[in-house]
Length: 229
Ligand SMILES: Nc1ncnc2c1ncn2[C@@H]1O[C@H](COP(=O)(O)OP(=O)(O)OP(=O)(O)O)[C@@H](O)[C@H]1O
Image (tube, rainbow, N blue to C red; front, top):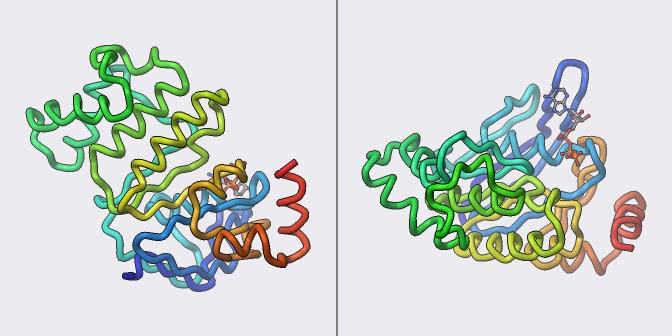
């Protein structure tokens, strides 16, 4: 599998805060990596670094995945005050698809996530679960090699969580999936590898089975115990 991202002793800083500290990681095409850890441990920062949204302050960072081959979903996606179809079409247009073609691609993308009945609905009026589905449709339409998801089901009710998670699994087929989650059940269902962050450091990096069944550093063990009750 080809190497997509290589981090060697990478630091990311926001003023005096070091959000990532000495992170060393290699991510290959086709992997499904879950980033877990307590609030503020650096999960979003790591995803944002991989997506080219924040610079690194120290160490070496190499990305072999072109930005246009990536799509990122945020916990609370930003929707434009326009129809759901326009929201999808604009994402395509911004990546260089001619407008007419982009408009045409919107309907099938929305149908994939079950929003075909809401094509002309103002996206800002959608529920949280519907907005997350729209965000997935937008990402899906771009057909990215790499899908980055930052706690995409965190603010959803249990039913919407299940629905969006099923769509995430489907959207990840044949792609590299990199996601942050506090939901360890979701991590077990979706990830092939777990990276556990602690105060900006990579404290464990293991295949999913070994993470949940093998010996772990003490902090990671306590984290899993605390989160899985
Ligand atoms: N734009 C920013 N400016 C200043 N500090 C920031 C910024 N973004 C993140 N941080 C800080 O960097 C650290 C890591 O934050 P990050 O959002 O990456 O954590 P996280 O693991 O994603 O947390 P959560 O689980 O709460 O989403 C925190 O101390 C946070 O306050």
